[in-house]
Amino acid sequence: MWGGRFAEGPSAIMREINASIPFDKALWRQDIAGSRAHVAMLAAQDIVGAEDARAIDEGLQTIAAEYERDGVPEDWDLEDIHMTVESRLAELVGPVAGRLHTARSRNDQVATDFRLWMREAMLRAEAGIEALQRALVGRAQEHAETIMPGFTHLQTAQPVTLGHHLLAYYEMTRRDRSRFADARARMDECPLGSAALAGTGFPIDREATARALDFARPTRNSLDAVSDRDFAMDYLAAASQCAIHLSRLAEELIIWASQPFGFVRMPDTLSTGSSIMPQKKNPDAAELVRGHAGRIIGCATALMVTMKGLPLAYSKDMQDDKPPVFEAAGLLDLCLAAAAGMIADSRFEVARMRQAAELGYATATDLADWLVREADIPFREAHHITGTAVRLAESRGVALDALSLDEFKGIDSRIDERVFAALSVDASVAARASYGGTAPDQVRQRVAEARSELGMD
Ligand code: ARG
Image (tube, rainbow, N blue to C red; front, side, top):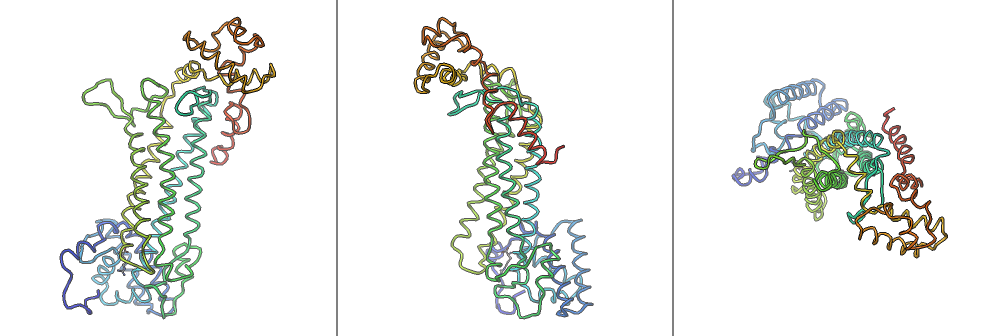
């Protein structure tokens, strides 16, 4: 393709280091779509004759059918998907194939192909998130009243409802989804026609190719258009953030599934056994979601580091943009599906969760709040009184509400029998009915909002 300028062909090392076909063959659909839009525009502008354009377009359709059937051949001498398609086109339609590359460079071609691929990956991520959200909201509705310990520092803090806890992940994934949608809106500009870096002298119609490829408009600066990989970094940043959330969810499920916790039984279908310990059921899917998050963040780092030192416009370093994006996208799709499956099919051990909330002095804050409300004691003093009560209960190995009224009065005479009503975990969560709080009523309201956001009704 550039043999005219060279006396010698590339060395074996050059061929190997240069070849991107092993991975960029994933772009074949986008490449053929881009070429078809380009040649149609060239014909409409009278840059290529109608006859030639038709031959080229038919050739491209034949290639698509071949790749669909047999896969894409990998010939390192052809470097990348763009040359692979073009050389097959020459075999099929002869020298007229050479007219396709008029007013185009592989630089704007790859930028276009990659955006088209990226747009689908973003839509796939959004759909994967939505499936997870439906599972979260469904389980939250089911468990609006299920009581569990809420934690800070992984120490029992205050009782919460499981529905509230699950809806926390709904909020995170809502932000994740909007990040992909934002990124998609931002990359809605077509680089095709920017050519190598400076645009072209041919009278092309960039609006037409942008429209044909379903972009809102053409990019406005040819140098930026062929150098820009922001859309890929936007994707990787959004994927990293999403993976961080999935990893935290996975981490919680792993903890909850451990025997000392026993809050959840993971589905058999997303667990593995041990070859030596017959009793084992390991949460491998959750662990791999946690592990894959690290790899996704690594992919984001890889592309950012690749891009940070590049002068305008295209440099071959940019060919390395694809492997981390393809890897991250494959991992994210898997993690989202695994997370949705774990949420949809886990069994929550409701009795065990309640018991843990009851045994962990989770309602100590409620006692302090009661002292403030009913006995008009300043919160700091109430905190101190409550601490004394917890110490006594702990030394006797009983829950707070197992202390007798006499014992409470011995700690502070202003306590009366009404205190017991405030010490139950049910009273505790019901009391936290502030907007966005854990009370079952609040959870049900948030579930209703989420269901309507997701079109679940
Ligand atoms: N395979 C190349 C890539 O992915 C295509 C662009 C090549 N452009 C060039 N001037 N060598 O970046």
